[in-house]
Structures are given as structure tokens and as C-alpha cells.
Length: 135
Image (cartoon, rainbow, N blue to C red; front, side, top):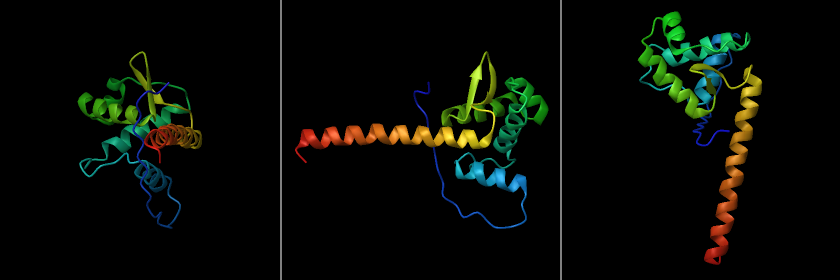
């Protein structure tokens, strides 16, 4: 169960070009607010891709394995892992990391349910506050 989760949705226009899986993954990740202007070497994208590649094999990875594979520092990997876990996209099991589910469509469906539940909670509290204030 995810207690605190930060979901950012950025509505961007998808450029219609040749179908490039990399461009589509970047657009998806951008739409989920995974990238920042500070990520000059696309390390978050690279970490996400590494997790995605290993999700099909159901193979969780340690931060050291990811760092070695991508030639990144463990600190950089941990920074991105914490951010990805905050979004609810990545989970950890015995100090190994993996995508929450095995494919992107299911992942987006799960996030949609998370957002829906969050709005249900917000609506319930708003209704209660309105009642208490006599609105």
C-alpha cells in the first residue's frame, strides 16, 4: 500500500513524427513529470529504461547494478530511485528495485486508479468541510 505518493501529470502535445519508441517513452515519462531541466544527461530516463527492460524478466535490480550498467554514481541512481518511488512507479523489495507492474499500460492504469482514489478522498473531505461550514 502506498501511503504518500506524488503524481504529476503534465499535459503536453505529442509531436506526430515517425514512430520512435524512445521518443514515445520520453513523452510518456515527461507527461508523468519524471524529468526536470536539471537532468542534463537524461539519467532519470536511463534509469527508468533500465527498470523497464528488466521488468519483462521480472528481475529486480540493486542500485549498484543499475549504477554499474549505466555508468552512473550510486548517489545519482538513489536520487532517481527515491523520486520514482515517490511517484509510485517503482517499488523496492529487499534493497532491489523494479517497476510497480510489468508493463507500461498496466502502470498507467494503476496510476489512474491512484489518482481517482486521491480525488475521492479529497471530495469526501471537501464535502465534510462544506457541511461543517454550512455551505
